[in-house]
Length: 244
Image 1 (cartoon, helix red, strand yellow):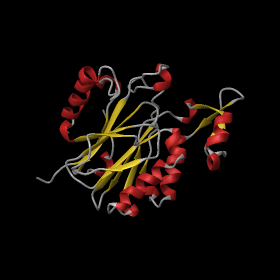
Image 2 (cartoon, helix red, strand yellow):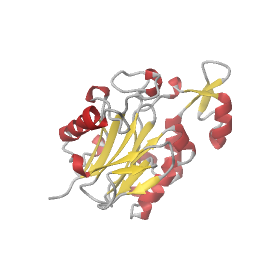
Image 3 (cartoon, one colour):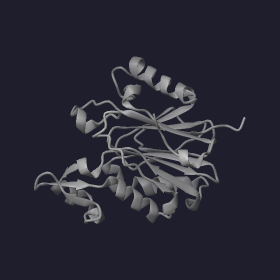
Protein backbone atom coordinates (compact mmCIF):
# COMPACT_ATOMS: atom_id res chain seq x y z
CA UNK A 1 0.00 0.00 0.00
CA UNK A 2 1.00 3.63 -0.42
CA UNK A 3 1.01 5.68 2.80
CA UNK A 4 0.54 9.41 3.27
CA UNK A 5 1.67 11.67 6.11
CA UNK A 6 4.28 9.24 7.37
CA UNK A 7 6.72 12.09 7.92
CA UNK A 8 4.51 13.64 10.58
CA UNK A 9 4.50 10.54 12.80
CA UNK A 10 0.98 11.40 13.93
CA UNK A 11 -0.97 8.45 15.28
CA UNK A 12 -4.27 10.36 15.03
CA UNK A 13 -4.54 10.17 11.24
CA UNK A 14 -4.61 7.23 8.83
CA UNK A 15 -4.14 7.98 5.12
CA UNK A 16 -3.48 5.14 2.69
CA UNK A 17 -3.92 4.19 -0.96
CA UNK A 18 -4.44 0.71 -2.33
CA UNK A 19 -2.30 -0.73 -5.11
CA UNK A 20 -3.04 -3.06 -8.01
CA UNK A 21 -2.22 -6.10 -5.89
CA UNK A 22 -5.13 -5.15 -3.60
CA UNK A 23 -7.59 -5.56 -6.48
CA UNK A 24 -10.13 -3.36 -8.20
CA UNK A 25 -11.91 -0.88 -5.92
CA UNK A 26 -14.39 0.52 -8.45
CA UNK A 27 -17.72 1.18 -6.74
CA UNK A 28 -19.66 1.37 -9.99
CA UNK A 29 -18.84 -2.16 -11.07
CA UNK A 30 -20.78 -5.25 -12.06
CA UNK A 31 -18.74 -7.09 -9.44
CA UNK A 32 -19.31 -4.54 -6.65
CA UNK A 33 -21.35 -6.90 -4.49
CA UNK A 34 -18.71 -9.62 -4.75
CA UNK A 35 -15.10 -9.04 -5.80
CA UNK A 36 -14.95 -5.27 -5.33
CA UNK A 37 -16.75 -5.31 -2.01
CA UNK A 38 -14.39 -8.01 -0.77
CA UNK A 39 -11.35 -6.04 -1.98
CA UNK A 40 -12.51 -2.88 -0.23
CA UNK A 41 -13.30 -4.66 3.02
CA UNK A 42 -10.00 -6.56 3.08
CA UNK A 43 -7.99 -3.41 2.38
CA UNK A 44 -9.76 -1.54 5.17
CA UNK A 45 -9.26 -4.42 7.59
CA UNK A 46 -5.52 -4.56 6.82
CA UNK A 47 -5.24 -0.90 7.74
CA UNK A 48 -7.34 -0.94 10.87
CA UNK A 49 -10.21 0.91 9.22
CA UNK A 50 -13.82 -0.02 9.96
CA UNK A 51 -15.52 -0.48 6.61
CA UNK A 52 -18.95 0.32 8.05
CA UNK A 53 -17.84 3.89 8.84
CA UNK A 54 -16.26 4.50 5.42
CA UNK A 55 -17.86 7.31 3.41
CA UNK A 56 -17.14 7.15 -0.32
CA UNK A 57 -17.39 9.85 -2.98
CA UNK A 58 -18.99 8.67 -6.21
CA UNK A 59 -16.63 10.77 -8.29
CA UNK A 60 -17.76 12.54 -11.47
CA UNK A 61 -14.78 14.82 -12.31
CA UNK A 62 -16.48 17.78 -10.66
CA UNK A 63 -15.22 20.38 -8.19
CA UNK A 64 -18.00 19.54 -5.72
CA UNK A 65 -17.11 18.98 -2.06
CA UNK A 66 -19.22 17.33 0.66
CA UNK A 67 -18.85 18.06 4.37
CA UNK A 68 -19.24 14.72 6.13
CA UNK A 69 -20.64 13.99 9.58
CA UNK A 70 -22.24 11.06 11.42
CA UNK A 71 -25.47 11.48 9.46
CA UNK A 72 -23.93 11.44 5.99
CA UNK A 73 -24.75 8.77 3.45
CA UNK A 74 -22.18 6.01 2.97
CA UNK A 75 -21.97 6.80 -0.76
CA UNK A 76 -22.25 10.44 -1.81
CA UNK A 77 -23.23 11.18 -5.39
CA UNK A 78 -21.67 13.78 -7.67
CA UNK A 79 -18.77 14.89 -5.47
CA UNK A 80 -15.03 14.56 -5.91
CA UNK A 81 -13.88 15.72 -2.49
CA UNK A 82 -14.89 15.06 1.10
CA UNK A 83 -13.97 16.80 4.38
CA UNK A 84 -14.76 16.09 8.03
CA UNK A 85 -13.90 17.20 11.54
CA UNK A 86 -15.22 14.01 13.09
CA UNK A 87 -13.10 11.14 14.33
CA UNK A 88 -14.02 7.57 13.46
CA UNK A 89 -15.31 8.60 10.04
CA UNK A 90 -13.16 7.60 7.08
CA UNK A 91 -13.30 9.40 3.76
CA UNK A 92 -12.63 7.68 0.44
CA UNK A 93 -12.17 8.45 -3.25
CA UNK A 94 -10.96 6.27 -6.11
CA UNK A 95 -8.30 7.03 -8.71
CA UNK A 96 -6.32 5.60 -11.62
CA UNK A 97 -4.17 8.38 -13.18
CA UNK A 98 -6.21 11.21 -11.67
CA UNK A 99 -4.29 12.68 -8.74
CA UNK A 100 -5.39 11.87 -5.19
CA UNK A 101 -4.79 14.72 -2.75
CA UNK A 102 -5.13 14.43 1.04
CA UNK A 103 -5.41 17.26 3.56
CA UNK A 104 -4.84 17.34 7.32
CA UNK A 105 -5.12 20.21 9.78
CA UNK A 106 -2.74 18.91 12.41
CA UNK A 107 -3.87 21.37 15.08
CA UNK A 108 -7.63 21.48 14.64
CA UNK A 109 -7.88 17.81 13.60
CA UNK A 110 -9.77 18.19 10.35
CA UNK A 111 -9.15 16.05 7.27
CA UNK A 112 -10.03 16.15 3.60
CA UNK A 113 -9.53 14.15 0.42
CA UNK A 114 -9.89 15.04 -3.26
CA UNK A 115 -9.95 13.19 -6.56
CA UNK A 116 -8.17 15.68 -8.81
CA UNK A 117 -8.49 14.88 -12.48
CA UNK A 118 -7.84 17.61 -15.01
CA UNK A 119 -11.48 18.68 -15.11
CA UNK A 120 -11.63 19.05 -11.34
CA UNK A 121 -8.28 20.83 -11.25
CA UNK A 122 -9.27 23.50 -13.78
CA UNK A 123 -12.56 23.94 -11.89
CA UNK A 124 -10.44 24.52 -8.74
CA UNK A 125 -11.38 21.50 -6.68
CA UNK A 126 -8.32 22.11 -4.47
CA UNK A 127 -9.35 25.64 -3.42
CA UNK A 128 -12.94 24.42 -2.94
CA UNK A 129 -11.74 21.61 -0.66
CA UNK A 130 -9.61 23.98 1.42
CA UNK A 131 -12.53 26.41 1.66
CA UNK A 132 -14.80 23.63 2.92
CA UNK A 133 -12.22 22.66 5.55
CA UNK A 134 -12.06 26.27 6.74
CA UNK A 135 -15.86 26.36 6.99
CA UNK A 136 -15.72 23.61 9.62
CA UNK A 137 -12.91 25.15 11.64
CA UNK A 138 -9.62 24.47 9.87
CA UNK A 139 -6.84 27.06 9.70
CA UNK A 140 -5.07 27.09 6.35
CA UNK A 141 -1.73 27.74 8.08
CA UNK A 142 -2.06 24.41 9.89
CA UNK A 143 -3.19 22.33 6.92
CA UNK A 144 -0.72 19.85 5.48
CA UNK A 145 -1.33 18.75 1.89
CA UNK A 146 0.07 15.64 0.25
CA UNK A 147 -0.21 14.97 -3.48
CA UNK A 148 -0.33 11.25 -4.23
CA UNK A 149 0.57 9.13 -7.25
CA UNK A 150 -1.04 10.14 -10.52
CA UNK A 151 -0.07 10.38 -14.15
CA UNK A 152 3.16 12.36 -14.53
CA UNK A 153 3.54 15.21 -17.00
CA UNK A 154 5.94 13.17 -19.14
CA UNK A 155 3.09 10.73 -19.88
CA UNK A 156 0.10 13.07 -19.89
CA UNK A 157 -0.44 13.78 -23.59
CA UNK A 158 -3.40 16.11 -23.98
CA UNK A 159 -5.02 17.64 -27.05
CA UNK A 160 -3.64 21.13 -27.72
CA UNK A 161 -7.04 22.53 -28.72
CA UNK A 162 -8.66 21.01 -25.64
CA UNK A 163 -5.95 22.59 -23.50
CA UNK A 164 -6.53 26.01 -25.08
CA UNK A 165 -10.25 25.68 -24.43
CA UNK A 166 -10.04 24.54 -20.81
CA UNK A 167 -6.81 25.49 -19.06
CA UNK A 168 -7.01 29.29 -19.29
CA UNK A 169 -4.47 30.77 -16.84
CA UNK A 170 -2.52 27.50 -16.76
CA UNK A 171 -1.79 27.71 -20.48
CA UNK A 172 1.85 28.72 -20.00
CA UNK A 173 5.34 27.26 -19.82
CA UNK A 174 5.13 26.63 -16.08
CA UNK A 175 2.63 23.87 -16.63
CA UNK A 176 2.76 22.81 -20.27
CA UNK A 177 5.43 21.39 -22.58
CA UNK A 178 5.22 20.06 -26.12
CA UNK A 179 3.53 16.70 -26.49
CA UNK A 180 4.37 13.63 -28.53
CA UNK A 181 2.89 15.20 -31.70
CA UNK A 182 2.26 18.74 -32.92
CA UNK A 183 -1.38 18.62 -31.84
CA UNK A 184 -0.54 17.48 -28.31
CA UNK A 185 0.84 19.03 -25.14
CA UNK A 186 1.93 17.49 -21.83
CA UNK A 187 0.35 19.00 -18.73
CA UNK A 188 1.78 19.05 -15.21
CA UNK A 189 -1.30 18.55 -13.03
CA UNK A 190 0.81 18.09 -9.90
CA UNK A 191 2.42 21.51 -10.39
CA UNK A 192 -0.99 23.15 -10.83
CA UNK A 193 -2.28 21.44 -7.68
CA UNK A 194 0.81 22.55 -5.76
CA UNK A 195 0.51 26.15 -6.90
CA UNK A 196 -3.24 26.27 -6.24
CA UNK A 197 -2.63 25.06 -2.69
CA UNK A 198 0.10 27.61 -2.05
CA UNK A 199 -2.10 30.29 -3.61
CA UNK A 200 -4.75 29.46 -1.00
CA UNK A 201 -2.28 30.04 1.82
CA UNK A 202 -0.80 26.58 2.37
CA UNK A 203 2.82 26.85 3.50
CA UNK A 204 5.24 25.30 1.02
CA UNK A 205 6.86 23.46 3.94
CA UNK A 206 3.47 21.82 4.58
CA UNK A 207 3.26 20.49 1.00
CA UNK A 208 4.46 17.07 -0.11
CA UNK A 209 4.60 15.81 -3.69
CA UNK A 210 5.03 12.40 -5.30
CA UNK A 211 7.33 11.43 -8.19
CA UNK A 212 5.66 8.07 -8.87
CA UNK A 213 3.65 7.82 -12.08
CA UNK A 214 0.61 5.54 -12.23
CA UNK A 215 0.96 5.12 -15.99
CA UNK A 216 4.56 3.88 -15.74
CA UNK A 217 4.43 1.73 -12.62
CA UNK A 218 2.60 -1.58 -12.69
CA UNK A 219 2.04 -1.46 -8.94
CA UNK A 220 -0.73 1.03 -9.73
CA UNK A 221 -3.80 0.86 -11.95
CA UNK A 222 -3.82 3.28 -14.88
CA UNK A 223 -6.80 4.26 -17.01
CA UNK A 224 -4.56 5.24 -19.90
CA UNK A 225 -2.55 2.07 -19.74
CA UNK A 226 -5.63 -0.17 -19.62
CA UNK A 227 -7.28 1.67 -22.52
CA UNK A 228 -10.81 0.53 -21.75
CA UNK A 229 -13.95 2.28 -20.60
CA UNK A 230 -14.42 0.35 -17.36
CA UNK A 231 -10.86 0.33 -16.02
CA UNK A 232 -9.72 -0.81 -12.59
CA UNK A 233 -9.18 1.79 -9.88
CA UNK A 234 -7.45 2.18 -6.55
CA UNK A 235 -8.98 3.45 -3.31
CA UNK A 236 -7.59 6.28 -1.22
CA UNK A 237 -8.74 6.61 2.40
CA UNK A 238 -8.16 9.17 5.13
CA UNK A 239 -9.61 9.40 8.62
CA UNK A 240 -8.89 10.12 12.25
CA UNK A 241 -8.96 7.56 14.99
CA UNK A 242 -10.76 8.07 18.27
CA UNK A 243 -8.70 8.69 21.38
CA UNK A 244 -10.62 5.89 23.09
